[in-house]
Amino acid sequence: MNRNRRSFRRSGTRFVPPVRLQIVAAAGAGLLCACNDTSNLAPGTPDTPAQFPASQEATTSLAPTGVTPAKFTIPPNTAVELPPPADIDPNHVYTLVELIDVAQRRNPSTRVAWEEARQAAIKVGMAQAAYLPTLTASALAGAERIAFPLPTNVVPAGFATSNNMEVVPAASIKYLLFDFGGRAAEVDEAKQLSVSANADFTSAHQKVIYSVAHAYFTLDAANATVSAAQRGLADARVLQESAEALHGRGLANEVDVDISRRGTAQARFDLSRTYTAQKDAMSSLLEAIDLPPTTKLRVASAAGRPLPPRTAHDIDDVLQEALRRRPDLLADVAKLRASDASIAAARSELFPKLSASANLSVPFWWMNVDNSRYFSVRQPQGAALLNLEIPVYDGGLLQNKVKLAESQRDAAAEDLRGKTDQALREVALAYDQVETGLQQYNAALALQTASETAFHSAHDSYKAGFGTLTDAVSAQTGLASARANVARAHAQSLINGAALAFAAGALTSSADFAPAKSR
Image (cartoon, rainbow, N blue to C red):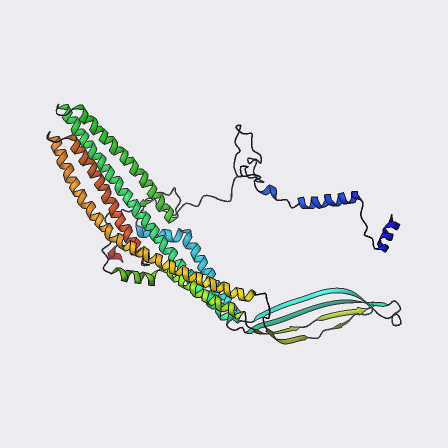
């Protein structure tokens, strides 16, 4: 067999292994491929539960149709735990200013924006480092054996060997001398992005302030609606008592009593619905502050808070002031300027770069030849170099980088224009809503006053035996609705004032909601 294989090799014919060897090779290749099979890491079909290594509950096969549905479960996740209890005094009544201060400390959006601002500042330092030289220290150590050929008339064996050992400590320095403004453009881009990150950080705080204020006023409206529903229930009970008293004296029929009891039941049902809205509003406030949903929080009433005054500024002045003060627009302007700097940095890559470098090393080298005594050398070595790099051909890479930067700049400009238009629409809408909200509140007050008069008149007339229960019930339900409308209109006017300040970029601190005398 070996003789035949050598004859094949001499004649240039390729040796073909036996069929059994081919089968073994194919099986080995298949086994190696199976070692990297990841098909079992994902569900086999869209309706098959996922498979988790630590889970004994998850199954990889479907039960027969109509017997037992597959269970889609995960193993117990111990990496996520309940947050620590909030530092909230359950006996303290928190004002809006205090709630905003708590939210600014706890809300994750402000912490994320802060970290992003810090990262942008660090990138400025990274870009400025290009103006400084780089100094590198290194050390190389090793041993090697070399055999090199020599004429047999010199060395009978035809070769000689050498054993080498060396330790080479070295230091090198490199400095970019000129790059056609590339470094300056990168530093400018990093600085503009830092400005944008700081503006986003400011915007995050303003959003938290507004979201807490919105949730606070919504909760206050829900509380006031509960109070109005409680008063409506009390009025319905008064009507029921009057109907029952008149029925006892023979001045009212059984229908009046049933209608009055129905009115009381309806008022009780309406009150239960206000409790649900109240709990939802409290949950929204806890979410805005980033407090656990089980937090017991007492909140001061906003009933005595003055409504926002009618703005004394023309709408054009408010719009212009918003463009100057909104942090999100400043962030987009900074991003646009950063894209301009990115274009300059990309264009600088098309031009030559000149750099200088120097290195110094002191090698410690020991060597013997054909097992002779070691001899050594310890002489310093160094070099000082100028390096000129000229881009000649790169397959269009640098040109495409410039085109990409220019496209990103155009996109940033369009994004800024769109954000500006959106900001103007938000300010204009908030400006109009302040006026309409005040009008609705005044109308709700007038309706409540008229409803109170109508209810008392209808009740007194019915109690005296002159009026009808239908009129009294209608007046009672109208009064309950009017009271709820006043509560909602009051809260909505406060929300509208906060929304206008937020849209104009003027909602800058929790102190904006402090009483006028303490500002």
